Image 1 (cartoon, helix red, strand yellow):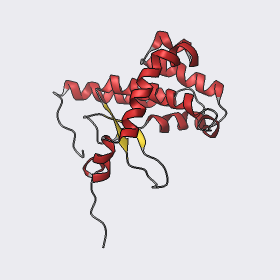
Image 2 (tube, one colour; image 1 turned 180 degrees about the horizontal axis):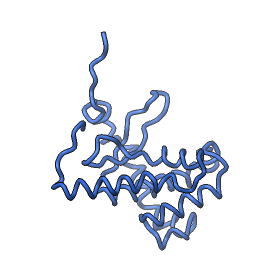
Image 3 (cartoon, one colour; image 1 turned 120 degrees about the vertical axis):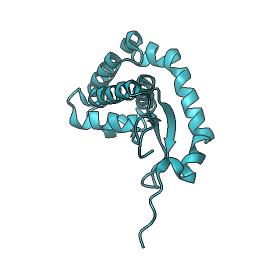
Image 4 (cartoon, helix red, strand yellow; image 1 turned 135 degrees about the horizontal axis):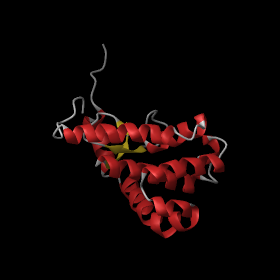
Length: 169
């Protein structure tokens, strides 16, 4: 017998993860470090493009210059700065889509929870670490903004429609 499908947002593990202290601490730490270190030391060029589309263009370019592949970016040596880029990408999406940060249950279970943006107008989640990985794999310089532009367009359509609830949430 097939298991009954339960949307992610309704699963107990999803609900529990939103209050998870490690996730909440990670968010607070990333938020604090942006102005204290990221824009001053890690990537000063982004200081003039905080959480904008142009910031995403520059961030992707800088990531491509720094790393040959996603294995390098997510290695122990680079993980701290890479996760700051993940936060920058996610926060840019969050601000543009009126979303909120959430933690997704690990899939597969051996992996840790993923941080993502949940926006009311879509049943999907925006997962910045996945976009960073795709950008480093495809190396076009346009992967992150491709998804961002679609998200912004869908958000604008949702607002124009009167913010009707999304189906499939």
